[in-house]
Image (cartoon, rainbow, N blue to C red; front, side, top):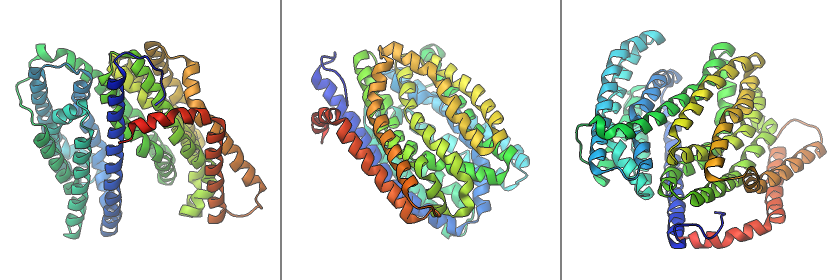
Length: 493
């Protein structure tokens, strides 16, 4: 982690927080990857037992239920992490409020189950929505205990709870599918996993309940409301591209776009998400220490760029060869959107750091309004971009999302006294090395004899890209890497 010396708070406390951060990322990443391997195996096995229509039914239900899951939590967990000095009485009342909200959404889901099934013209959805809505009664038991574990930097416990949820859900889904339950296997498995995770959270960090009192919870609910509106706005604009592509361009175009987006976001989902899970609690621990926050923002941005930028740019560079080799000629329509979305993903990997800073510095309201602005601007951009097909929708992400995120950059830079030059210097090792990689791969492509994409050509391009990126990094930024070595040694273990 790059940063200057002489910051308030003492070196030992700062080093201990750094170690907590690294341990949190290590536990979260290691256990998540281990459980993800099992989940992938189970998913492939279940997919061979079930029909595509079974997954289609679940997808219809998830559009509604995914939205309710966001609203149901009401940002209470994040508010507990941010407002570190909440008294025990307020935490007990938040625990009671979480359960009350879960009951409200459970009842509302029972009322809406039949209309949702009629909207999709799928009678089976009634039972699916009714059964899955039980999760709104079970998940709230985990909200406050999980937030307290996160606030106290107990990342190992959180990682094991998440792993248990994933593994139990996968096993339950396989058992239900083998028992001939059909699409119900996709419903039962996740609900069993949610139940196990809630039970473990309560066992690890038990917490009493009490009736919520508005006078006690007013400031906490305001913070939770700001976070909730921001998350709802995110849900709107992050799903609007699929809605536009599916409605205006058709199933085939949506298939090209959805696969390209999934592939482009692998670095975001596998690397940035691990950091994102740990940073809110770490930032909250130093929320009153602006130099420490500044050090974390610059250090995390540099580290994320070094890992994700070569992966995303490399994906964009080899897309022309990767798609036909990996999937066949029928998927060539995904090449152009993949190139655009992969390049854009290198920027998107950096933005969650800003949102976490706004939350812990008391700027949740500002972050909320930026989210609302994004929910207005981006869907409009997708509609306009759809005139040029899925490539136009992908281009709307690349052009508009940096513009609507610019206010967050300005606010965070002013709050933490970060200059644009300091931020650019933090990203420069990744940017310059990635540029060298791009130039080398393009030169190689031009030098190779013309021919259809094949595995040999793809492998050669990837090998050259990796070698040039590593070589440029160690040649051009050797001093920067040497400065990081003592820090890495101090954080080991």
